[in-house]
Length: 374
Ligand code: GLU
Image (cartoon, rainbow, N blue to C red; front, side):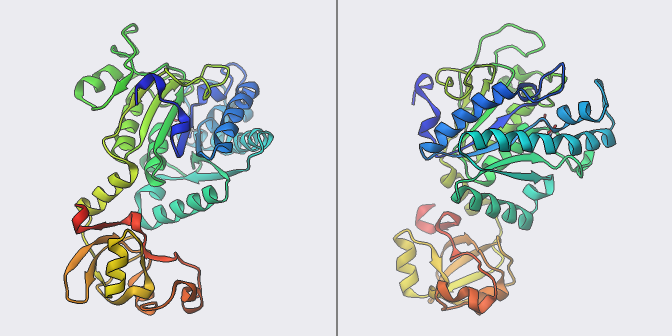
């Protein structure tokens, strides 16, 4: 795809990160309603055409500091936390109202670093977001700044947005910002040429990012390059572009800097499963399930005959046939105790046995790598 012709309708699941300096009026510390209205109209158009959209929105602190009279200038951690608490409620309200006008339903998700870095919480957050998307709801995500202290916070929504894109296997991340993209000279030097496409994040690219960040937004160009690192490793395209347009998403063709991944999100995820995880046990499956897996299906509990090891939901396990051959590896949707109880059981009977409605699949096909795929 040539960069000039790349438009957002070719992607299936897009994370759109909106910076504080676009959303909040610098002077008055209020939401820029007209701008948000146009953006949510663009989002409505994409959603109508079947694109799944997630929003990562900054602005809680920029809005809240004005509301509770903290004025301009540097804030202490506890002031930031208080400002975020007051601002977040206004921020969510604005998204809710404006997305509603475009016929969409918003859902607020506040995340802390632990929610994307710790396995169990990660899976919970991922499931909730996946359910919302399935139901056609637009998740509006921000960092939970009121409980995040300096050691346990992202501090910038660029990286948070990239983690979210990776968590939900989005194929595109758009950073709407107050800059046009990455220039060949660092922002503090000015000048240089807009780099339209980056297929490798080299030291030279990092040097171009410099270290600037404006008063209202925390992320300078360096955090955007860090975000690109995370996004492309997860198989997502990433665009840095200016949001200072009448219709920020409609006018995207030919603008900004695109970072190009080497693989699709599914392939990137499979590579991670195959290469980076230590199996915690195994699931032994019958011949019917072996055939089903080889034809590209998920592993259902009905096809599992035994397990070994003490594994938790989300851990990697080996998938083994009855002769003991390792067929591949996958992330299990059940803890070993629950898996033991549903061996040979039909998916429709799982809830009655375990007392909760877990996943239909013991291992989903997107969470599985078979040996011949390697
Ligand atoms: N989470 C912060 C807020 O809502 C924004 C961080 C950022 O600007 O990247 O105010």
